[in-house]
Length: 278
Image (cartoon, rainbow, N blue to C red; front, top):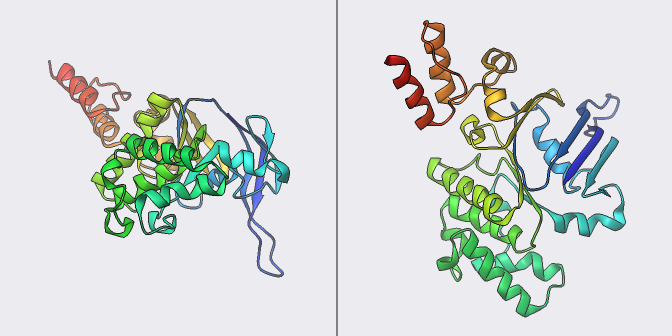
């Protein structure tokens, strides 16, 4: 679905200063239909990477391809953004209309989709995110999680093959985060949409197919959640924590308990501790 080759990006520097690379030679291949979580501390390059996936940013060096299309080719820009939709951190910055259904219809209208098709897409997108009862509501009266689900519906209405959630849960309370996460997993599972979730919440990576850890503009770790989170010391050295379950199991191991570190979910962790107690 997505490929980067020696991707580099430097934000413009102040006059007289040398630009510092925010991304320094990133090589990635992301498979179609996968659910990928990108982790990293602030300034690690994870959001800069995300913005390259639908050409919000263009490479300073190297290449980015979306299903074989070069993001630097201006003629392909509209098609690339049809394939890859972005959901950003603050839902209030994405909502452009005074009624939910009008907001969801905004992107398809700008793509020139016929009115009857727009109606179908709006209804289907709101149903997918569980917001069909709010079709005529004012977005500003919704909760943070509901607003973010409306923003996701607006992206779904474009019928993308990939959705990038760039810190889309960062400003939400636990309930709102759960709403958005469950929606993303359902889109991946039922619609086959490729999902890339940029986050600093470790627990959000537990059910991903793959976890990529960014540090200083480069890929520091890459593997399944179990493979990545088992490396507790390495993650700590990168300034990151691990999910609460892994933290508990790690501390138990340090105390001499024979427990695995790859029991990421609460249920698996409880089973592992119970087995060790026997």
